[in-house]
Length: 250
View 1: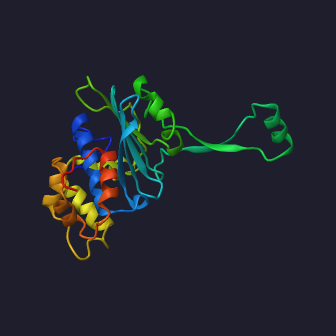
View 2: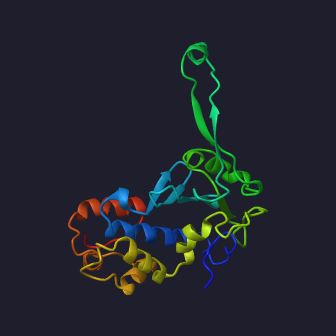
């Protein structure tokens, strides 16, 4: 089966379905791994409460990551694959603006920063409603090798008119967003490999993953079947509230 990528975006769920899936991924990671720094997936339903924005992120700790913004206009996916030929960063000198900065620039060490030139076509057709997210922080500092968007009145997900590199890796999206296929077996397979030490003594039952993919309420019984060693339920409740996932009797 062909994995989801920018060349195969029809398998991505609609906006509400994607939001539900992202919350499920973050919830599973939260239960399985109690150290935030070691998790792949996280979700913040209160990313910007004034704008009604919610935010999902994936990071592998090696420079590859993607972010998804859910907002009143729709949703946009940004991804950065650091080994992609489309990942172009240049060190540029920061031009001084004040007199003090100019003096420091003349007699001291010149300041510089890394700036990305986004591959032609990736964001050229991006709707203006998503510009603040893609061209602002934190995305600006993380980088962009692929971008997918959908407004609420769109009938499908969209990408720009891109001439991809000749190599098989392309923009790296296939290695990152394959998890968005909405198939619990995909997450289970990944989690059993990534959290291998966690699942040495017990297996992650597919029915438990399906339970969360179906957005059914969490109970202590379900949680302990996923992670028998979990005991910090008060902290878990706070994290589930941040995600926006329902629970009962915790």
